Length: 246
Length: 246
Image 1 (cartoon, each protein chain N blue to C red):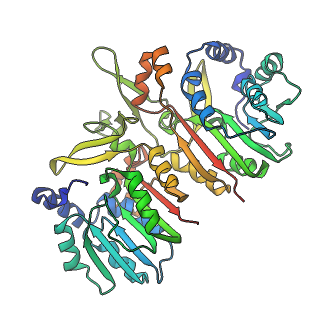
Image 2: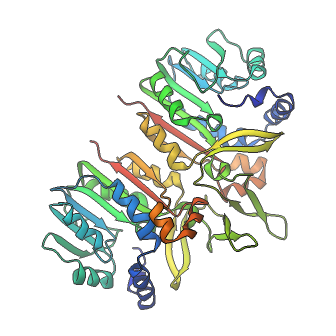
Image 3: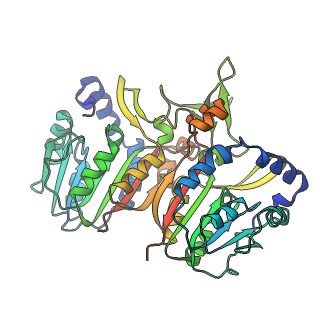
């Protein structure tokens, strides 16, 4: 089972503060790209894996979803979700990504925002998601980019004499597996997988790849945070959209 | 039309010498991965885009291909091919990847080894290849990895105090387009495309992605060139296998 870092008070405090800002990378980079790739979910059942504070679940209801199931491993995140994003059509469940067998299938959309890089067994997760997806249904997930997760001990920016970011140094790309990174607290567990390992696991589960996205800042994002131009130097996120055709 | 660097005598000399070695990255890394992904081509028509000296074309005949068409922009490479890899079932044509309209379709396999990063209009190339592929046919191509092609002016290794490669520095990943690199001669023209631009162009042309491969050295390769262990730090090649289902 993945680490339950979100219930660590120090981590939770830092993470909550970050997500409450209106100019974090999720808001400016990842979320707009995910929204553009969202299929029509009117009268569809939606599963949100790693729903966190439930904002996306409420959005899915507003987009006409018949029902939304939001799962997360963190009690604290689910508390926030129940507090701020409750709706009669939304069910929040405490559940690990490592075993989805407790869920009833038939989802028209399985959605996951920046959670699957916490999953230890990604091929298994993809197979379980495939089984829970209705024929014609969509899988849409985002994760940290393999270029970011690769380096044991973390990659780093390089700067010119004026302090501008000019390049990115990484390593260990082909050595997939657990990574311990410092993020609010000392050891957050994530899993690095190469592009091909991610894409091939989605395909091996039975899905057909529809689109891959490596989001770049749009004009609004660059206006809000001009330094995000640095994101043209590398890529922060990898987004995969796939469909269950048979 | 792509640059015809292979007919530059200085480039050709250096390239020919490299390919004549038995421990270059093509032989140790790219070729074994491509062979593993090769579909059954018995009594199939095969197109080899950027066939170079024709070694693969002859191999396809030996694997039972009904006929093989090898195209290349370089007269010098085609001379080598006709000299060393002629066969009644092989037709070598001087042709640019930028316009394949001169070819008759119905290929069961369209194959391209380390050539498409020279193509200026990759989406067009994919559409033309799709039109030339028979239903059920396979597209299999390799290219330099986006992590390698990204940096304007070239990326670079970083070394520890003992001179061991420890990490890779790159930049300009999201700025796709022409790259001028020094390889045997001063300015070889290549085109950088992000992972998603490559995959999405293959899908947009109509293909279904079957497998992605980022080859790593096998035991034989590591025995032959132990320093290739460095290739676990990044990835040199991107290989895409796709099928025309409808």
